[in-house]
Image (cartoon, rainbow, N blue to C red; front, side, top):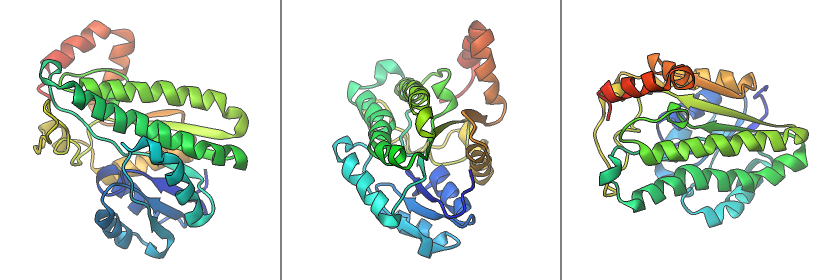
Length: 263
């Protein structure tokens, strides 16, 4: 995919991976639509982009799934077309199953899965009409295998893989592409913003996340994967080995996960 002249829509763009993607894409002669809940943070990201005059802000909440058709229509009007939707918005979790209220599971599923699916379904007719479109979905290695303290998060990310694998199959005839991106540990605030069992925010960084990939490096690798129309890509350090342990040695992965000092 050549990004020059394209319109790229990024959710979760107010910080972390989304912010880094916005700054990287802003160097590539394309139009950007930045979305998240916090409009003031999006404005800051916009001003840090190389060409802020080519950046538009569209603030909304992924949890409000009934509004996604209107949100998609507003996004299309900003530049007349959307070529690439990067589904990056979401929340994480750090709590044991026994300590996690079902309302937390519901919240994570509403934002990470249903919000992403609703937005993608809302823009899908636009892609079909244009006979062109690309979905990039930031899931996680947790979408491929599980880890303690992340039950609801893992469930939502696994669900995204199932949905977007099918979307790719059903709409190959419409020249619509899907790239599923699975980050390992990336040094962002994802851990600090994670929900604990009662629905409050952890507000604490863990060592694994702190020592993860630098977010700029990750964003560059992700952009390369989209550009090459990759079906699925894993970006991280040694934690990527979990993909292959899960496939060939699931009991060994279980033992490794049980020994890991990760919350």
